[in-house]
Length: 278
Ligand SMILES: NC(=O)c1ccc[n+]([C@@H]2O[C@H](COP(=O)([O-])OP(=O)(O)OC[C@H]3O[C@@H](n4cnc5c(N)ncnc54)[C@H](O)[C@@H]3O)[C@@H](O)[C@H]2O)c1
Image (cartoon, rainbow, N blue to C red):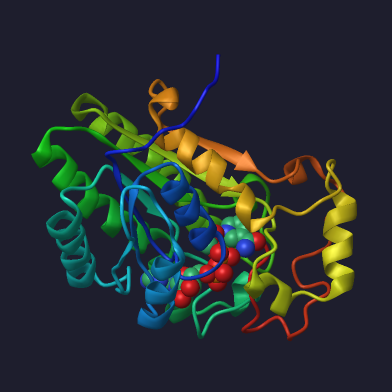
């Protein structure tokens, strides 16, 4: 027997998909036969990523928007439904540390920085989930809400507390959505990557830090951008139809490590304003 994941006839919206993990995830939805909408805050990135996606179901749709902006998110989801005929899967992938924030102790983190990190990682996810769940509930066809959180939710996040707290809140949001929306046939899950070899991470971390992370994981590797899409399409597919309210770590076992480098070790830039670790 051959087991295939076939998402033909489904429409998937992936946020922050102009680069990195989101771009990789979007490509797997296209390969699985879904129609794909590619969101990014940068219209050029959304357009170029969409142009690269090949799905038997048709071309991808670029839907540039800032996922922290309530009206923009509502308009984006309306566009997806109008252009692609509905919405079956949301992958809320937007996150990381937005401009004006960075690594710093909690005692050095001001209200503006907390709000910026929470807006980027939690509020954006909640706004996208609300818009998607509203159209899914109205259509009555069910759906899947997937969130990209982080391995940083499984351990203390010194110097990165706002990010860890916001991502952990998304893991909890998943449980609430699962209970509220389960009766409507809508599932909610999160994927929590470990340090993933995106261009953003490569630009922020020294080779020594990369090597230290690799050495600290049981599988002796970082996560590759292309390795999260298979988990996403599985969770979105009917093969996972009894799974909801869960978060799944995809971190090469990093959560088991006792030897991970500190969050401010081996950065190309000083901690304030640098990219986050996983
Ligand atoms: N890279 C890692 O090591 C890692 C590890 C764990 C979790 N994550 C999480 O994975 C997700 C993706 O991270 P990545 O490393 O691929 O990031 P990335 O920086 O490589 O790409 C993120 C994309 O999102 C877009 N974007 C940023 N803010 C946006 C907004 N407000 N609205 C719409 N688009 C926006 C950017 O323009 C960019 O194209 C994030 O939620 C991040 O927290 C990353």
